[in-house]
Length: 347
Image (cartoon, rainbow, N blue to C red):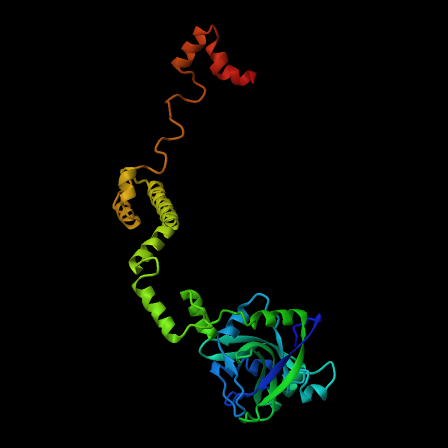
């Protein structure tokens, strides 16, 4: 359940086991192929209950699941929370405790939290049909928002409001404690403390600033800041600050466009087309305009050689031409010895 981590931190965390009404599942199947691969365990937003405990699913769980150091990537799908220390089922069982399988936790904004099965165990295949409900084991921060899911359980009892919550105290591994401490830090700049965040932006003291102070600061910002800069002037300042980056992006786009134009001309040349446009003209054209121009050019350059490899000089095999005879005699040599059959015989 702790993701195979055995380093103990000496820290414990309170886990509230939650069974939500209306999320029962049909587990009457003979093999893994017939069992569900994705099961909903919590709803997005508030998960109301008769005991008044706040169980809220929101962006914190989404961010936690995306964090590279989230320690509970794969959790147990157990029976009645028998892998969760502090529950009755845990006290009544011993290691190795039976689990129905293992799953990953997926949070879909606006929808809810799902257990996505990665595998079912043999005992899970044998006993899953005896259970009809699911129960999550979430860790929540002080505001009641879920920040982690430690395990998921198959349960027999129906989800009855007022009877669907139980609490357990779980020892944390070192990395689990570090993760939860980092993600439940009261200094976390979340929008839960929107007033403090807004006061920081406006330069106000959140301890003393009233709503009227915040409204006045916002009105002043809308009309111009303390230095006399209007929104238009501020926009100009931002534009000036962004100019080096904008120039780099423009240069990169120009280089990429030129590269694509070069490819169009190279393809035309390979087809035997002559593109007679100058570089400045090509620079002013769009890629689409250049392609249209190239498509309208007819191929005029032969792509294959038109000169034969051998030219027949009209002289029969073994005969000596007048040119050969003249060259040999001028060199004081016998033409037959140099060019004729005598040469072949001597060879």
